[in-house]
View 1 (cartoon, protein in one colour):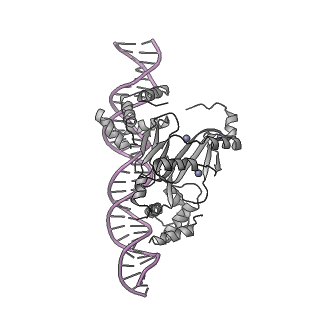
View 2 (cartoon, rainbow over the protein chains, first blue to last red; view 1 turned 120 degrees about the vertical axis):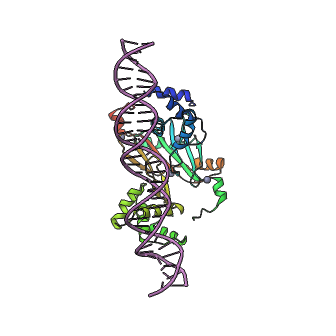
View 3 (cartoon, each protein chain N blue to C red; view 1 turned 45 degrees about the horizontal axis):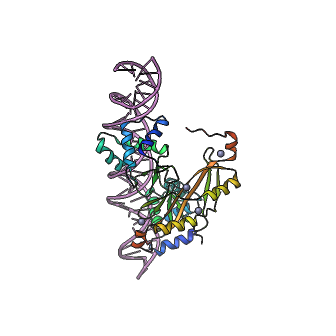
Length: 150
Length: 150
DNA sequence: GTGTAAATGATATTAATTCTCAGTTAGGGT
DNA sequence: ACCCTAACTGAGAATTAATATCATTTACAC
Ligand SMILES: [Zn+2]
Ligand SMILES: [Zn+2]
Ligand SMILES: [Zn+2]
Ligand SMILES: [Zn+2]
């Protein structure tokens, strides 16, 4: 199922959060960008329609969205944190280039066999998983086939 | 093949880095820990054998190890960055209880099919992955069968 | 041993994120 | 429509991770 901005607004309400115009703007700013964005970029976008918003509100909105698992952290190699709106309710995993940080989403992970085995062996009821695969993207491989330092 | 501290020291030399006692200590501190560690934890460990080392040197050593791809960033959800020494030995993953935190290790993840597919579809050369599965352990399931949110 | 470029450690600086608090507001109840 | 109140906001201060600077020290090639 796909997550639209309206659907997300409904989820906020369901969880007792107020739907303020600031939050709605932050939400739209993240949801409308295909790539992952950092707080400063979100701020730039939001201030075009809401010029007086403060950074604290942006950070608080991001935290709220993260608490609701509507947004996820990606690309750990930048100085500031990067976020990406979840596009669907299904799994959402990242393939990250360890050199340039380029990130590709994928949803088919097929860990069900592994999870079944773990349930059988340990008695755990599996709720979910965190999976991130890293490697080197085609561009970075082409640029320097043998990753040499300095 | 397993990467030992000695082997890594050789790699440093090959790349023209000097092998200072400080670097050796940082290297040992990361390599000897099973889980990922952040710079502050590395500092604590290193100062037990090298009390005068400064944080700048720790950060510089980490950067050098990262440039050589001997260490990789993991666990993007912490405030400080976390690092894990690369081991070519087998994978090391966790099954974590989301309620009580009990953790079980497992090593057979079998993501090779998935990684092959991603390489075919994206051209990425896969270097590794982060995988953590979470759920509720048998004890916690017995204690309260229905988990309630918030 | 000597020379020298690289490395160290103390300190200052930068920049991201969080905290504080007085004023504002969304949204339920009347 | 109006009130109430807890939730929210924005400005600025505080905290914290990470990097830069620079005088001193040191690994290591010769
Ligand atoms: Zn998945
Ligand atoms: Zn790349
Ligand atoms: Zn694995
Ligand atoms: Zn448990």
